[in-house]
Image 1 (spheres, helix red, strand yellow):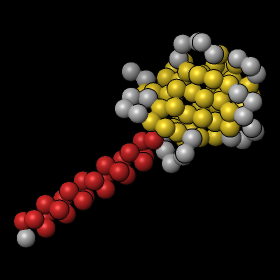
Image 2 (spheres, helix red, strand yellow):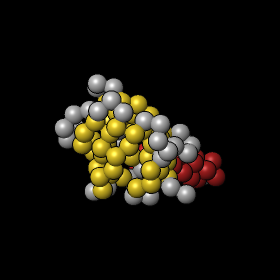
Image 3 (cartoon, helix red, strand yellow):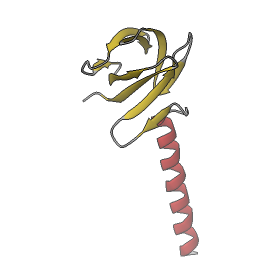
Length: 110
């Protein structure tokens, strides 16, 4: 009986941890999170969006070096090589812009 309770508790803890991680990182294949930051890929097309760390990021427009995003209802512009911008409790930095997608590094603001 003791073994059964231990297994049940372990299973419940594991399920809880998995659910918490899913809620933290979002349910998108375009978000890859490590311990302290996420790499986010957003398609470079109208209405493309992704949820990261509980916040929705939408693609607005881009050129070779600058991207405009709508993050939690606030429009921001990011430039390659620029330091991270704080918005909606997140630090967001533009990593790359290709003809197909935009890649960002996102972490919780301190």
